[in-house]
Structures are given as structure tokens and as C-alpha cells.
Amino acid sequence: MEMKNFYYLNFRERLEVKFLEKFNNQTESWILNKVPIHHFTNTHLFEYFKEIQFVPFNHVNFFTGHAYESTVIHSDLSYGNKDTVYALNYIWGADETLTSMSWYKVKPDSTFKVGNTTANTPYYYYLDEDVIEIEKKQDLYHQLVLVRIDTPHRVVNNCNSNRYCLSFRGGPTLSWEGIVKYFEPYFL
Ligand SMILES: [Fe+2]
Image (cartoon, rainbow, N blue to C red; front, side):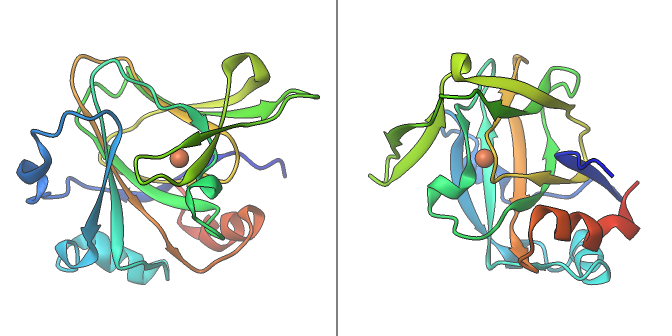
């Protein structure tokens, strides 16, 4: 079977996200906050993680994508993430018909560029002319989705308000093919 880069899981519910106000006046684009996992331990989402045998790390990546902003095309492996090739994302906030995530193939003879994060660590990114889009996911809000993050990808917000994303990372640590098989019984 040909692998896609994302699969919707059978969890769809509005999460009460109480810590959000704290981050609301941040203006930096695509800012990443690390939210302690205990904020979620009394939610249905956490029960669901137990059911599907996903063990989240101690911190959750919380991304705010501001109005009309896109990320660079990048691979998460270049951000110091050694072995996690997937994330379980939960997205809300803007207009879901106007926000999306895309995956890319690198053109022959093209390669990544090296940038520096605000923490002065290197990350690899790709120019538009060096890649070809191979798949695009229109967002579906308040829905858990398994996404691939070790290959070049980008998130786009074409809406006039913020897009919020809780990106859960954790175990088991498997290849993309392995993790798709692992979570397959729970796909929508
Ligand atoms: Fe990413």
C-alpha cells in the first residue's frame, strides 16, 4: 500500500485548553512553547492516548501560527529531534479551509540550506524552487491527526486569525511505515 504523509485518528472532541491565555500576546511568528503534559492528564485525549498505546513525552509542542504566516519548508529532524518521525497534532483557531500542511520531495541535485534557530542551533530548510509538493492536508480542527515530520514539510495559515497546534511527540519510536501500521486500527 502506498503510504500517505498523514492519517486522521478516530478522536474528535473539543479540548478545553486553559493555559492558552498565557500565550496570547506573543507576537513572534510560529512560536514554539513547551507545555507540560500534566495540563492534559485529566482530559479524554489522555485516556485516548492510553487506549492507542501512545506514550507522550513530558512536554507538548504548542505552535502559534499567526495570520497570513507560513513556516519555512523544513524537516523536524534538523531541530535536534533525533528519532521521532511522527507527531500527533491537534489543531484549532483559524478557518480550517484556509490553513494546511504540505509535504515535499527534493528535486534531484537540490539540497537543504542551513539556518540558525533563536536558540542558535542549526536547522535545515528548503527553498520553494528546490522542492516539489507531493501532498497537501487541509486542516480539520479539533481532530487528532498523525503526521510525518522527518521529511520536508510546511504549514500555511492563509487566514486572518491565529492557527494553534498542539503537537504531541512520544513513543513508540518506529519508522513511518511502522507507526502507520501501529496506529492503523484507530484511523478514521
Ligand atoms: Fe515541523
